[in-house]
Length: 538
Image (tube, rainbow, N blue to C red; front, side):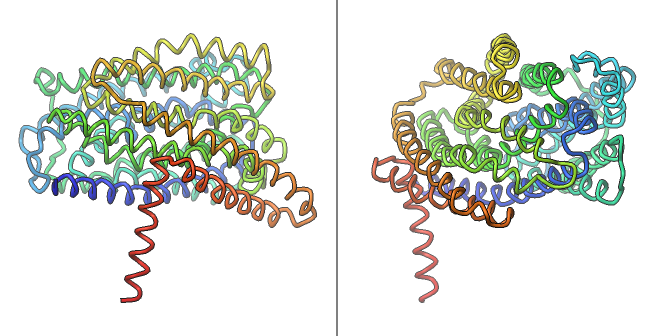
């Protein structure tokens, strides 16, 4: 029992530390986005960069990022080969680590060279409008950023290795370096009319992420040298986990390419607006998901090995329930003061009122994805803990046709949100479908108990609906009476006032409805405050 309590405390401590680092990373990432928006706005140059960046992003963020296939495969296999976190890496683990690195380097080097040579042709396929100037500009950006493809997979292996040793901080701090490099370079260099400096800064930033991990990797006892023992059983096990997960992530990226194809037929700056809406979405949601799932994933893997299935259900329901509870106020905030927040944060320099409206349209419909997003990412970790990455892959493949159909319906036929909102609405609907399929199919591995989770979610939705109405009306009155205030003061005052009102209405309503997760969170926060208060008076 005491061991379980210690484990709980360890998870919570790790979650809080990761949350702090992730918040810092997201804030600096936001400053990066604001700086890019100020310098390039929502223009052809920004569209070209964001079109070209999707391929390097597949490597550095989706495949090689925290929670990506390389990270997850390394954790699943390496964590079972580490008897004690205080011991340095064994010769067997060292050999496997270097084999994984060597194979990754060779494969991604070939891909990077192909992207460099055929950059214009690749961009011509993705950009449906076939604007020659846009295609040429995007091709130039892709050539500059092609080395990021090599770096991405290697960084993912480093992340997984560090997390296997319960080193959670470095992987979550590393993205700060890329953001810092981009901010510094595009701020120092003026009149970058082609976006060349932005692409170069992205490549240098990715290299810094890679170099930043090496000292700690060596400290853990790993020696970096090529190894080609591709026939070992452990490496085959990694491949069995990795290939379906990589395909799944690549399939996931196909959704992005489908969106790019449809967005390129819309107004100039549409793809930039969709990209910024996703970054705003990821700011709060990314903090929540990363903070909870990074420390929980190794625990899930351990519990599966020990066949402690009831504890898995408990951890999952509690974590997802708390994510739902916090996620709903984020949705309310987007729908009531999202426009004001976008104006406050981004409207400066080349980022004008037109760009603000486009981002608002995209973000309004993307907000529907918050709840299915956190559920999907959480349930996927259960599959990975059972060494099953095929099921998430197959569900992603199944949803491709749905994505194409919904984009055609919402963008071409119905023109939801000028087509921009149609793309993000289809993303939300596909995320919901994917989450539902994964939630149902996991019963083949473990009989999850969703009854309490969704019963409490129903209570949250009732509280959220009432809160949304009250905050929406309050926002109208605030605008009516205070619209003559200076713009910045007005936006800040409105955002703070509405979000305080949201909390003051939403939390008591959940407590009144006896929502278990609200009661648990409220009790924890109250105890912490009481503990600190009592400590001050001793």
